Length: 281
Image (cartoon, rainbow, N blue to C red; front, side, top):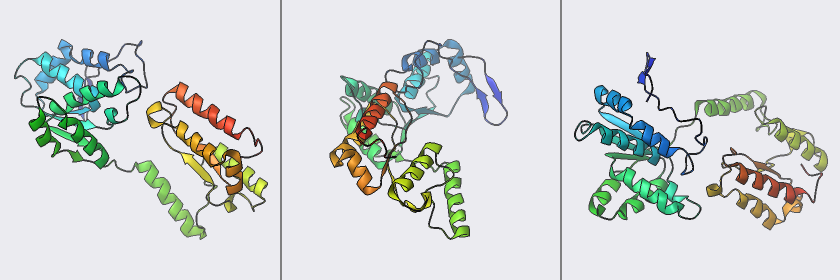
């Protein structure tokens, strides 16, 4: 823990500062979850939490619950016993694990998080079912786990305000112009707009607004558990560049390059797929 940062609206913030050597932009087992857990149990931070006397603690994902448990254990028996722990599961890692031993690793951590939670919140019915199955296999805690799994709360993610505003702008524009929606929308990346223009030129259509629904899109983060390679394999099985040309389609990869090796491989596969028709957008 470090010095508290004053915030007039939200109280105090006690950050856990991770060492510079930590691997950033990873929230899986390759990320700095151990350093986060260990630093959360520092005497200074634990003392601050005990003096604060919280009634509820919100722990996001299994690494958050591990950090909270480290604080509770650092405080000693009973000192935080009145604080209810709410486990916010933003992703069921054990249901999307990849690699040797990853599934068992995440299952152990997520069972522990569920076991120590007074309330569990997840983002979808599918995640709720996955957690319930996981808790049902919690040896030695089966009855308790089954009872707790029945009370898992599903809290669907809200629509981000900026995304909502983009949609409203489109509706207002359509109402003003009478158009059914322009695919040459000003919010499209420049590369996508240029691809639309090339498509219109190649197909002889009247400008970018006349190409219709032209994108076939893979919208996932570029990491192995999301299997973005399947997008390219699907296009290849459908006929590759010839299929895209015949149907007037432009392939689009839309997602964060979370794992650079994976992202680079997908991009190379797609470029290889399109290499046979270099003139196609």
